[in-house]
Image 1: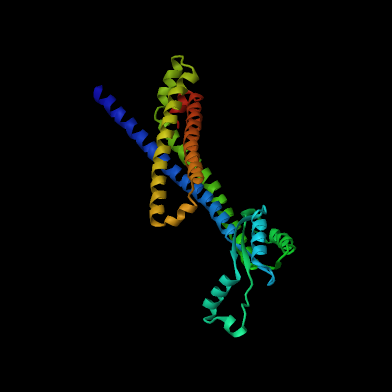
Image 2: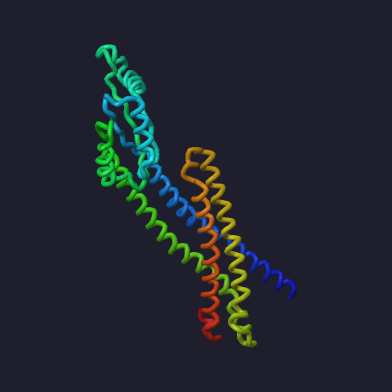
Amino acid sequence: MKQRRNKARKHRSLQVITLCISTAMVLILLGMVVLTVLTGRNLSQYAKENLTVTLVLSPETTEPEAQQLCNHVEKLRYISGINYVSKEEALKEGTKELGADPSEFIGENPFTASIELRLAADYANNDSIQWISKELKSLHGVSDVDYLKDLIDSVNKTLRKISLVLLVLAALLLVVSFSLINNTIKLSIYARRFSIHTMKLVGASWGFIRRPFLKRAILQGLVSSLLALIVLGGGVYALYCYAPDMAVFFDEKVLGITAAAVLLFGLIISLFCAWFSVNRFLRMKAGELYKI
């Protein structure tokens, strides 16, 4: 009798370990998708904010007037950053590219000062840049506004496609994750279907029967989530060590949302699946338990 109890305990322990590992593997996949979607959004914002619009200043614009213009432009709501290039700096860059100083042949500096603008991500599209360009051209001292229209169109189209693919993948994985975790929990409760029926026969209420299964589901969901977070954390750390520049996209907000999503999904889905499975067996009659 004692040997049977020990075997039963070992069998249950093995079931719990298998359930936690299976659930953790699904949560790891889910966490990877959440992490990819969030970092993809950061990447999109980073790419958009690094698209530059150049203000070409008039040749007669003085240095104090240029600095005053910089101060004014920097305060505009659609600007995330600026970089002022003086005539002297433009001459140095032109000399490097041409391999000779053009001012020696012309007799004066042919380059004009300019201001390189980085737009906020929400305004980094051609529709917004068109009216922004008109507004900037009306400023005193600005002779022209240059930007790469084709490049901006290409970047926005590519980012939209990537975002759509990631969202579809996330939705599909959410459905698959629910199905896998539900089947895993259902199998673990299936092994105790006769114990559920016995408790029901002796007069135990449905709430009393459900309680230990729900508590166990919460604990298993918590353990599975923690295992998944450890693996994901290790993966992010390894990626950071391999490519430190990726830290720009894996900020604290992204990591926090990913951890919360994995933890909440692990707890909620485990609790819901346990509730659903136990209720299924509670509604069955004795004869039906032998047929499934």
